[in-house]
Image (cartoon, rainbow, N blue to C red; front, side, top):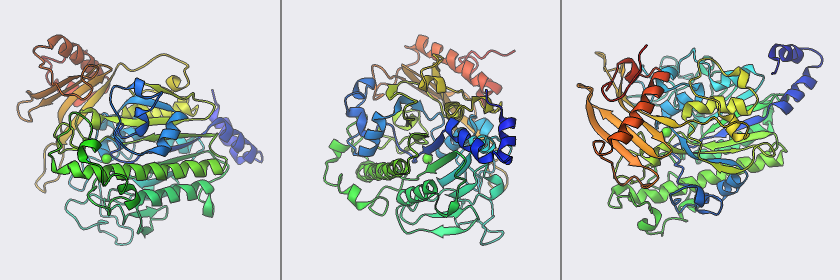
Length: 512
Ligand code: CA
């Protein structure tokens, strides 16, 4: 086990530099790239040899040449889950290792929802990396804070004029160990993004945001303008907004990418049998897939820079997303927030040359597991805070242990009570569910009666496109078994369904 206090004192002494480079050797750099709304199915390699026999779905007909190459060098998860598949709640889980009730972010953050904001006292992954001697950088979309009127250039004002306000500026005291900052809250004009830098200066940009963010990431890696401490290992998060909506025109993506898809008939683009081609949104798939290809290229540019700088060997690179995108599957207008596989299943691809063997693995990784697992991958497992509810599965990647999750929770929350000003003061836990290797179950309750409003139950082995919602009365044994597993997990995380004994006639919580 590392002796951190000893290490710290060495950092200050004359042997400081030596100690630091030894530390960098021992603890790899980490780059975590997570575009928004990038579904796991939108990865071309799932149709290729070595991958297609590991999943029971066909990949979307997308061009992702860089991710294809990257996947062949990586440990690729086929079944990673975004437990609460919505922007802010996922980001809260990712940053804190806690489920939405613990992270402080049960709902998407906007100025109407003071109830949903990253807890200032939470110990985040960047706090841990920073305290462990890492240089920490955040580039791109944060969307984890309740916007307040704190515009650095307009004291006392919000950073945008909209009701409610979605975008936000994150002041230094809320940056949780990130010493390099180039970020915004949430903003969806993809070719006119803006960012606040480390010093709070706003930058208006006139180019596609993933391209600009890749440039900034490369600048950080090259250490132009001495933005990072070269002697420290680094932890860099790059949060791209596309392929998030809007995806309606070449204002949202690059024309060169759109040209790849513009002449393809929709029934050859939206190939999932659960798709409704009559939906107005169907034509958007061309722009969605164009955004996927653009993100692929920008991710590839970061990888090339890493290699050119000789940093690739000692850097763990992870490609993931905050949630998926239904894109006309299941006939739903909601791209996310549902338990459907297009929304729930995210990419999770980890490359660590020479240390992690490339392979495909069905690990049911949950969003709160990401933080402890990354810390574990870096040899910092003894620094995982007590507050973390997720688990460290780094041993799976290193093939050093067999313990695996049997299930992952599905969580959906809605606005709860509102005060006289219309501000949301509580949240309503509208649905809970569970994903196992075989099944997906979601139970929706009525806001007033707290009784079952709707259930979704799919056999993901025999019905990979989730075309048959199984009747829980006919499949009561399966249903009961899944409820039993849910009861254990909901208790473990002290979920409001457990605390309020919701559906305790069906979900056998154990109280003691
Ligand atoms: Ca999102």
